[in-house]
Amino acid sequence: MALSNLVNNLEESVTLSASARAKQLKAEGRDILMLTLGEPDFVTPNNIATAAKEAIDSGKSSFYTQAEGLPELKDAVGSYFERYYGYGVSHEQVVITTGAKFALYAFFAAVLDLGDEVIIPTPYWVSYAEQVKMVGGKPVFAVATQENNFKITTEQLEEVVTGSTKVLILNSPSNPTGVIYTAEELTLLGNWAVAHGILILADDIYGRLVYNANQFTPISTLSEEIRNQTIVINGVSKTYAMTGWRIGFATGNPEIIGAMSKIVSQTTSNPTTVAQYAAIEALNGDQTEAENMRAEFEKRLNMLLPLINEIRGFEAIKPQGAFYLFPKVSEAMAIKGFSNVTAFCDDILEKTGVALVTGAGFGASQNLRLSYATDFETLFEAVNRLKEYMGREF
Ligand code: PLP
Image (cartoon, rainbow, N blue to C red):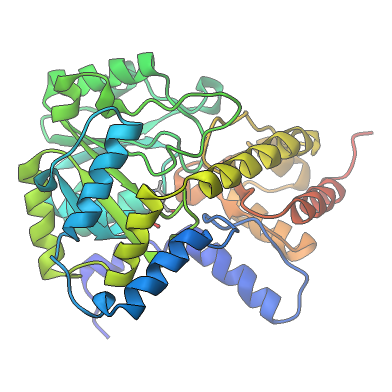
């Protein structure tokens, strides 16, 4: 079958394929520990599920809504921004989408022409580069090293900017590193983008999953100029354990948001109506469960990080947010005779049953990603197996 160039140039999502492989081995009866998943292991809080049930029982979930989302949900997003960002957003500054993932796609489709460049700090979340390519844009990578706490600087941006640069992506807290940029660092990056007339795509999806008294500062709160240049992407998946409901949103410049809404109206139409009603309750309702889940992730992080660093050849920095560790494993690879991190990751799965994600898909050839969105018992057992696999120093 002659498939399109678009599809032939598209990489599969390494996070989804790693999970699929692990699930397959599990189905074959292998004892697999899944540390691959980018989603909370909790079920959606009760108050949210109840709101969805009520929407079904009353019949209001049976119908299409406005393609760009229910006005009541846009109001809830507006209040959410007032609470967590300190500024409000009007209806024409909000579009509700089928997951934050589709908000990103609609954004790239709305602003990129053929050959327009998007600067993607590396390590990056797997879908950015592929989505940019899907709409004819060109991903350009600015590589942040582990030694620099996985943060890029304006000097690095200067090295990669060209006359075709249209967008800078910032994802803080980051998937896969968990790193958060400080307000000072973001001010420098934001002012740099403003000075160059470059749009900022701020993926704030992990903004509420922040640990150990660290602070998340949304870049859009730093100045009027920066906010005017920024489209914020956010959603309910990670904060409220709602990955299955598929509700995300984007806020910012009404012209760009209007263009994104047009794309939504010609592709997905409105996100599932019942999920929109659930999302209203998530954003407006009691936040206790969201805080409990955050606190649980924090405990796991604090327990897991020192243990991971005890594994021979593993070296992880302490993240401030999200729910991933991203250890450098170059020494471990050398000990085991691997030069390719994906082959190393596969060997770990085969020999120990611990499923991790190769750093290669995130643009990092020396690292592995492990998710601590799983229970303590699984995490302890995974560490023990990895320690045994790597052996001891003599
Ligand atoms: N952005 C980042 C950095 C993510 O890690 C994810 C999910 O893995 C998303 C966006 C998309 O989230 P969703 O489409 O579930 O809202």
